[in-house]
Length: 260
Image (cartoon, rainbow, N blue to C red; front, side):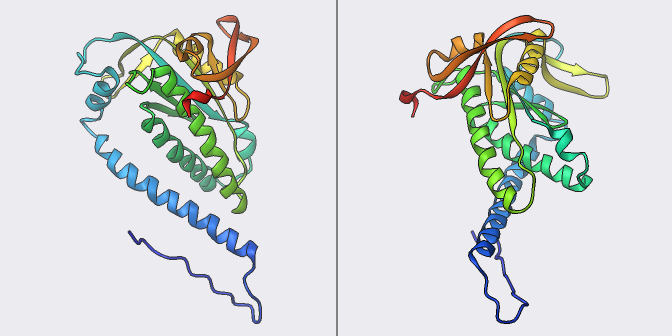
């Protein structure tokens, strides 16, 4: 459907628009189009906000209506991603622009996670945490998490092309994925509770994220085993993981040829 148009007026006499002007306008239009698309998505997601949000999130995570008074142990895949060098990039940036960059980043990443069967657990500063709790006919939760991570990295490359034209700084993300048992339950105070995952495996996934470099996806050995050869990856490390000792991991290089 038609939503609007962009009009350019050249106020300089006898000067014509050049190819660079056209590329700038096209990049701005893509950013606007992406913003409108994300806004439409979040209008639908906003139905989850309110008194029914916790119940909906809980049932989606557990795959059933759960007892709100208890927790449950479940093996899941956890994805942690953050912007590399974020503090340095935004140190001298206008606060409004800082917030816009974060919101645009989260708005682009959230639908990718959800489209791959995951659920955003929380946003922490420039970090996004997602949980993949259920396998599907198309793949295990390990595979769904890695597919989401690869799609997130691909989307960041496209965003950076558009952002560079409009003067925004290039940003890169590092992603860590781990699979293990967690406790799912409502955690919080009397006034506010969030349905989330807790446990040492969540801590390990967060530590693994710090190992990943810009544009990298690092998975634990446990996640790699669950992928059953569906991605190409090479063993890296060992890394000294705080609280867990020396561990190897796997750097994901892409999907296996038979997965295309």
